[in-house]
Image (cartoon, rainbow, N blue to C red):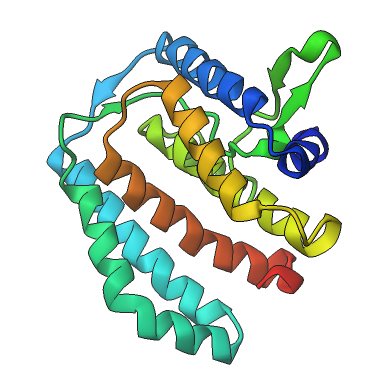
Length: 210
């Protein structure tokens, strides 16, 4: 699985498979768009921003006190980042998504073929929300965050001496170059949104990662 082959890639400083994953992600999204797509409305965009702000407050409320204090200090900066959810550079297509896209969902099969699994969506969310169409960049943001998490895992538990920061930067570049053009402002906002969710997930399931 991706945490195994990905950790080996971090240690080797190799991003070749990450680049191939970017191309596979674009192919996956093109296939999912075949089930139908529509254009996000102004109400959709406003709803994303409001939901992200509410998620930030939920994160602050769910984490230990000292972490909550740090997030409260960062709240103005985070809220400013989330504002881009409402101001994309171009119309945003809504389509079916993977919904829980991270490096652990990518198996490397015989011959190096990459296989994406587990398309049931984020398991902590209601089925209705999981199946709701959204921007493909939401999956991209989640995958990029997982590169960061993978690197931190390697630095903490596997090989503290390896160049994790350098690998994360190269992995992001390789993935996005292969995926294709993106709205960088919207992608950044979706990454911030995803990371606020990760705090609530850690508080509930992985406190050691807080």
